[in-house]
Length: 104
Image 1 (cartoon, one colour):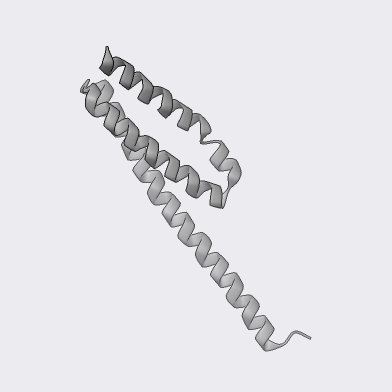
Image 2: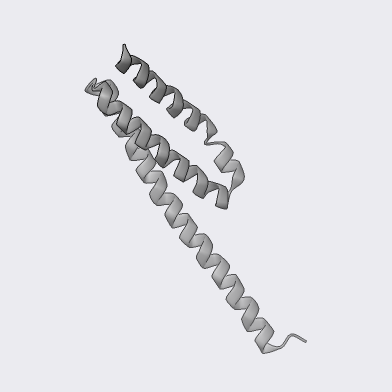
């Protein structure tokens, strides 16, 4: 027979794990929104306004935000984090393209 103390401890452990997951999910959603906004901003600055120098800064910031999103995603779901790898590669190529155009 399970004692009340054991049952309460298990209940507290489950509640703590759920709270941690909810906190990580909220952090992930915030980072995703920032990363998405920076991607849209890079497109507007580089392709719309043709400001290559500012585009480099935005692309670098976007890359940092994407890395933060991937890091947070790894804690929740490794498969989802691996599916973000093509986005990371795309940002690296786009940033490099920005730098090459700026130097030429």
